[in-house]
Image (cartoon, rainbow, N blue to C red; front, side, top):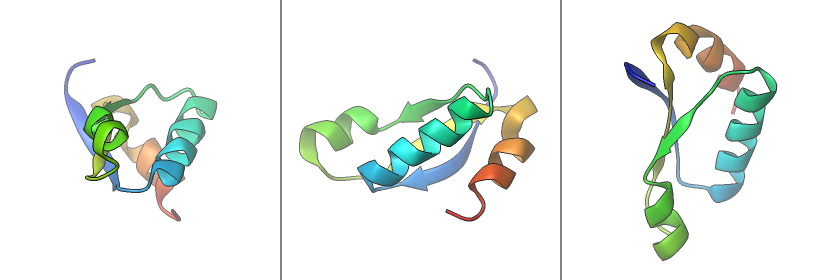
Length: 65
């Protein structure tokens, strides 16, 4: 994916799982930045990113989290 935009930053692994599930159910591909550090050290934030074409829909879906 090119032109990725961060739509949410999460520090909670449970929230991250919910976010990924919501985006998957909506057929919005996403990537995460920083997830491996969170898994290894149980600390830090993870950025959830989607392509520009999906930004508005992803933000709408994640607005209440």
